[in-house]
Image (cartoon, rainbow over all chains, first blue to last red; front, side, top):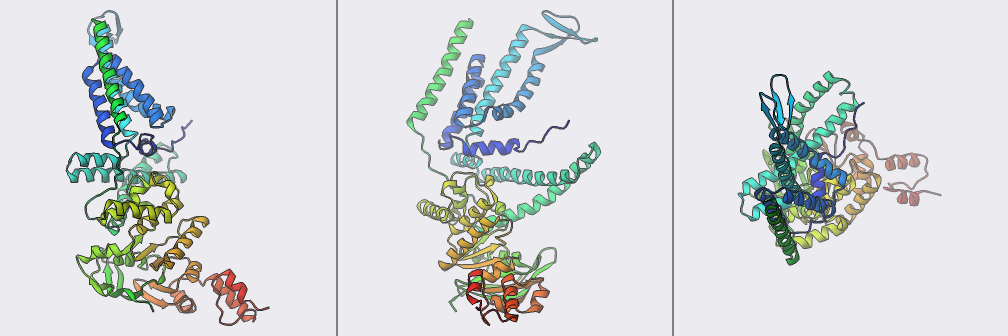
Length: 269
Length: 274
């Protein structure tokens, strides 16, 4: 049986959640800094307890603060989890010509084995990366692209790069819209009747996508020109000041993470 | 006749492919006029609008804004005075919130922050969009997007507003809202040019109709003059407005006041005899 196609694609929904997030009114620079600091702490402290704390707290913030529903958040985490599990497997498994303790699997020519150390290492790596991913989701789910470009501009990133980034981001949506429309039109005419037809349809959509997107891009450019665009995006930015209590929360959070790292490392010794 | 605001002289525009989209167009537009631009697909309506807005630059011919000839650098100036509401509202949406979207034009005009804020608030109020301020425009419904795209232009406070087929793809409620907005804008003295295929709307709303056919102006005059020329209607593939047909049928049977030419149901009821 065929699975039903999902209507909200990944990227679209991230953008959507960013716009309706409860943290939308927080200062953009603050959010970027917070996400980066948490990410760096996660990587530098390299402590599974800290990572777990970050995964949990970021999860709560993303669900509560950013207003993402649990199934959606799980869906967003699915792709990184799949990658990390595969990567973790690579770290955990080692190859040997003879059986090893405590666990090895015979693969006829060689043995795959797992030791306690490699397993722990894989788990730690997995947790560390998941913590980092959660911290980045905190940023992605609370900060729309235009706000991000404003932050980049305020740290004096070259104008050309910032604008290029925003345009590319916008055009991803145009491309996806166009592609979705063509796909629906193709499916409604049985363009996916069997595997071979599906492949042909896919190719044709790909070809048309280029032409159609070029046409659309032209119209978009005309629309920008007609509203006085002169090679510069002076986007409206709302003034969102950082409040003292927000800084205090971040400070407390970092302290707690550092404390966890300290305490667990003492216990381990 | 109110003062002339825009004058187009012998305008010709050809696309790079060699296809001549406009040839030798001359038109004088009075301040505050309500003009419907009609004609079949590919007659040159959209190209004409893009030229009026200074997005496209004509190969030959001149455009005068309030008596000043527009050339080269002043094309940008033209964009300040002429606003363009695109047919597909999506193609206008650029920012990620309605507020930033409406502010895009005023920001490009290099206005002060306070002024931008004021204009955005006004425009949102005008289009009844206050509660959408923080919403991402891409996820709004078709009618709401249309409203945002009109607010975009209202915030720029251009004297002339071009609408490219504004009623296309709107539900009846949104279309009514649009007509209300057009009436308001007209009352405020804005010059409105609307390209449309809707003969009933054009007959009801416009005070002047310009018919394009294969890049040339086929007819130009008040709605009655245009719609009574059978040959024009045939050549431009236009249909006669229903209200005009009803009038003609009733007139044949002597049931309506002669020369009354009602434009809408209310006027028709008044003009009926007996």
